[in-house]
Image (tube, rainbow, N blue to C red; front, side):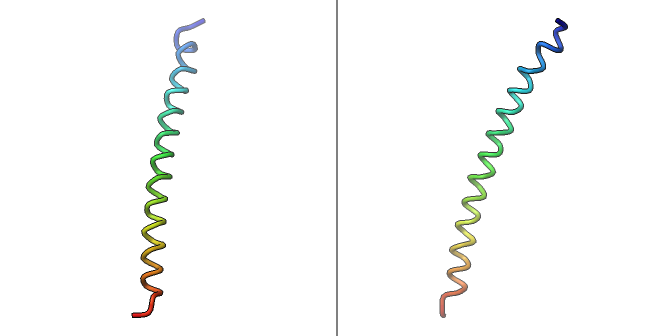
Length: 48
């Protein structure tokens, strides 16, 4: 089996793991942004 083919799955796995970690990081940041927006909207809605 050519070396390139045997290396492909390993590289794909590493890339997928990195992508998953990146997605998880984005989700965490999205949660923070959502929380900030929720607080901001609640503050704007509150009577002065």
